[in-house]
Image (cartoon, rainbow, N blue to C red; front, side, top):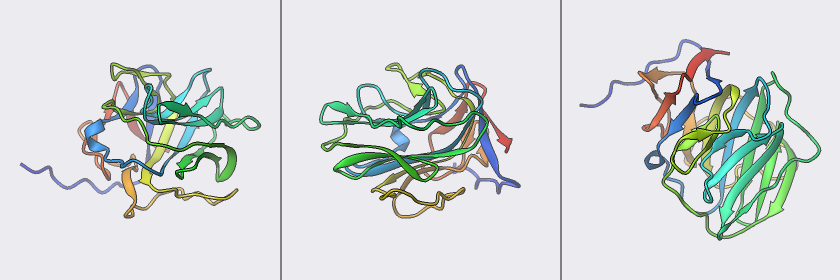
Length: 216
């Protein structure tokens, strides 16, 4: 039978990740992202950064991901058989602080935004290489679908959209996103049904490996 309606959250919550295998996993079948321009974004608060640090990733010689290696934010998209990877060189994310992170592909270039400021860009075009791997929120994904390069910290408001949501040098990030016609996936991290999140496009999204929803 049909699942009951999602519970109304009593308060704002976030996904709390403890590193290791702790992550939010979204099945590939739940993500219907057409080829072409898209935007990937989230709010992240890391307790510490590693040399290799996945944030929201579907990257395995294909697809896309946001990374924060040593706190340096980068956005990858596999276009026409190779990665384009603009990386913020002059600014680093701060442990213990909430940051808005966003990667934009507009069809001609990739842009990286940190807290609404453009921090890196690189020309890139072509068709995105797809895969059938899950989207890992709080790490990167291996070829066998397991998580790697885990995040130790909190993540919230993960949104994947068609089209380029942000352009120019600066914008003011929303702390809570609103679903619209371009929203493919939106994880508010506020409500769950068993291990499953109850959000836009999250039919296959589940808290895995000790991940939990917690008050901010």
